[in-house]
Image 1 (cartoon, one colour):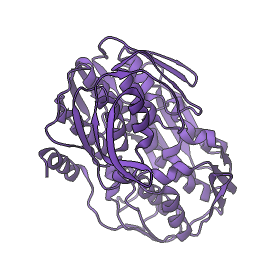
Image 2 (tube, helix red, strand yellow; image 1 turned 120 degrees about the vertical axis):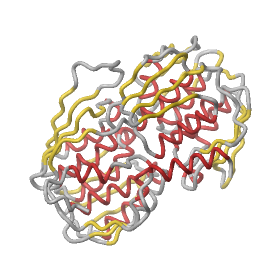
Image 3 (cartoon, helix red, strand yellow; image 1 turned 135 degrees about the vertical axis):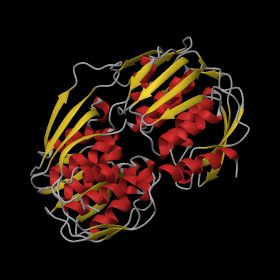
Image 4 (tube, one colour; image 1 turned 90 degrees about the horizontal axis):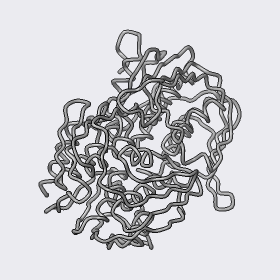
Amino acid sequence: MSRIRKSANCLEKKYSLSSKPFLIKHKFIPSGRIKLDGDKSIAHRALILSALSRGKTVLKNFPVHDDSLATINALSALGVKISRKKGVVSIKGCGRQGLLVSNQPIFVNNSGTTLRLLLGVLAGMDFRTKVVAGEYLSLRPMSRVNAPLRLMGARITAVIKDNEEYAPIVISGGKLKGIVYQAKIASAQVKSAILLAGLFAKGKTQIFERVSTRDHTERMLKLFGANIVVNNNNIILNPSQDLAGPAEIYIPGDISSAAFFIVLAAIIPKAKIVIERSSLNPSRMGIINVLRRMRAKIKIVVSKVDKPVNFEPRGELTISSSKLRGTVVLPREIPSLIDELPILMVAACFAKGSTIFKGVGELRVKETDRINSMAVNLRKMGADIQVNKVGGQENIVIQGQGRLCGSELKSFGDHRTAMSMVVAAFAAEGESRLDDISCVSKSFPEFLKTLKSLDKGDGSLF
């Protein structure tokens, strides 16, 4: 095993939860205030652009979990000096051409964002790199990002199976050219990989999105001084000088992590939760928009004055117990809430009437097949859930019954499935047991601790 992979495994052990069944028996009324660690998507991009800029950048409210550690590990393997103390990370940037060749394969664990964004950077490097992924990520499709990077001039080889490409991936970068790319799949990771490669390309890089995806990369590039213009779904990046970011960046709370507590408060009687300093990025507000349409009681207060630089809107969310009603979630909304669909499916079970999620096929290729993982678990709890295909479009239909029953549940090794089922179990009647909670370390190691802080009872939540 390589030195880099050993190092990554040590980090996994230090910040991962133990792998054991998790019993959910004690019921409670969640109440209180919480502040969540920084947004995972923003953290990856802040790390990468800080590494490619000149000077030192300090990231505050940095989230420490398996995925963010994968990006730190990858950049460190490329010669970037990074130090970390609690929720503060300091990066000594080395400029766009300052990365060093790694004498070992780079292990990115199961972080899809790390892998795909890193390929965009490596496409511009004048050396060859092998990137190795963890078990789950090695099963996720990669041609969607490899294809446009090849068009720009990168040489990429990957494992090929059934006309699809998978990790491990070997990439040789170098002289790139800008391209005009019509996005075939709504993917912020693919878009970001192309834009990062565009920093090293000759000529402009232009991307047209049919459906808008999260815009953290565009915002971060502007913050670091890149010559980027965004006009609705048309993004143009022109070659620029070395990047120069602010000395300090505060990463707002992760809205995808907040989603579990938003739904928890909405479906449990008498509950009320306040979430401080949450990201309110418009491209990530799909979860809020859909829940409000379902008549969830959610109050938003946008922060007026933010220091350091307010490159991402943030504010306070107050969620109160609600009587939810079913709704229809359209395909164009899916990219803005793709990570929140599992917990929205839980909310739909407690809503009156039917909820239809249209065009959700992308859930099949996440850390696990989340359509399957959620359908299997929710049916065990008594939910009426159907999955159908209409004209090549995959839909989920849930007939809300206002209740679920405790059951034996499976995480399927997926962090969002696991956390969604914990929320469902606390709102359900009777006792539930989840086979494994350790996978939540991928994005939210503090999940159980944060849940416990909302229990005003005798402290014996679990």
